[in-house]
Amino acid sequence: MRRKPGQASVEEHPRGSGRWRVRARVNGALRTLASGLTRADAEEVAAAHTETRNARELVEGVTLSAFGVGFLARRERAGVRSVQKDRARWSRYIDRDPIGVLPVATLRRRDILEWLDRWSGLAHQTRKNALNLFRVALQEAVDRELLEQNPARDVRVHKAAAARATDGLEGVLLPQEQQALIAAIPERQRAVVVFALCTGLRQAEQWWLKWSDVQEDRVLVRRSVGGLPPKGGRPREVFLLPPAKAALASLRRRSEWVFPAARGGRRQQGKAPRQWQSWLRAAGITRRVRWHDLRHTCATSLLAGWWGRKWSLDEVCRFMGHSSVNVTERYARKLSETQALAVAATPGLMFPGGNTESHNHAKRDAEPSGFLNRWSQIRILPGAQQVSRRQREHRGNNESASPATWSLALAAERVLRRKGGA
Image (cartoon, rainbow, N blue to C red; front, side, top):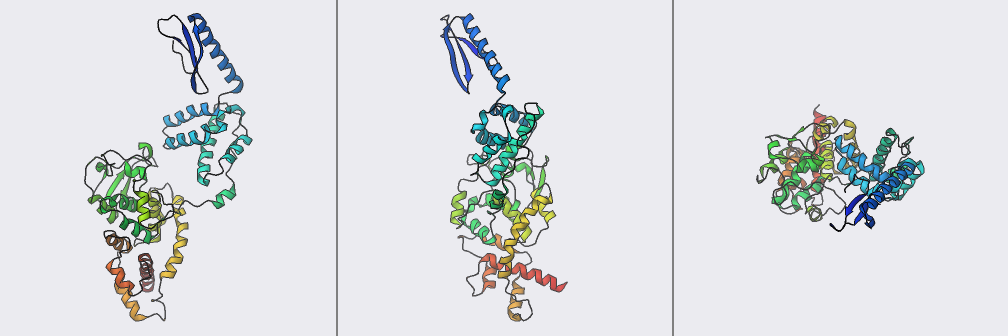
């Protein structure tokens, strides 16, 4: 006879023998508590197990791992968009940790601090994410009167760890790295990277993109992580820069998905293209660069003016789908690194005492369309070291200057020229 979860089950074993056994889950494993009994004795053993189990829970309380099952299920029913990540964090950092077997009612601040210390080797942001989830779960335990107060309420990741942590933008690709990466990717696979770079879509948003959501000059982002609506709860329009349009035009429609997997289905969420790391190595990029860093690169490039026109914070915020300008401002910190590059790349030809002849030559070669058009020329050439004809002319005999250096120089000259004419 099958019983409700948490209770023991009574089964005739083997069938037709007239002998019965009692089975129940103990510490997560299904075990036989007794066998070879009459049915009446088996029922008595099952009832005794249920009574003992309930008494233990009344005294000790439900464990943190057991509470997490209901906590995560309620978050999923509430439509929390990050519930898949929450489940992964809970399983790894709580269920597999000694704290998972502690009764919720017995948790104290000391337990939370010791738990946090055990995960001191994690990245700063990873520890913060796990702690935030833990804090929300314990607050729900307080609301359900399993705890008197939230022991994690005032716990914070140590400031020293925050000071050592990076801002998460170390994977941003500089202009010359963008050129090298695009040139290193085989032409038939280039569109997926170009589109990600020039739209700034999150990986899940790109993998869930359907041809029915593509218009002439924009795409409609309907789905994000887990197939849920994007941040903000509503679909958003993303207008396409010329390279993104060209990337879409080069694709063959062999599935409902714009960027399908090899067999035509939707790509697996959270997985970059299989060749991603080999493309980075071929481009000579040795530091850690994630697929999501293409999104960071897009925002940084627009703010820095690497692709021609320098965008405002508000424009980048709307383009990227950020919740507020405060989110976009983190990319502005990355631009301080590029200022030194711009200064070093500006030859000073337009300043008093500069070489007039060279200045006129630079003025003729400066293109209003900016770096984005020159980059789109470079990306179709074989080999990571190829540069455009315009850059070769402007470079002259100085072969040591990189394409990015001259792109920054041209951008600086345009800015100075506009100020001089104002």
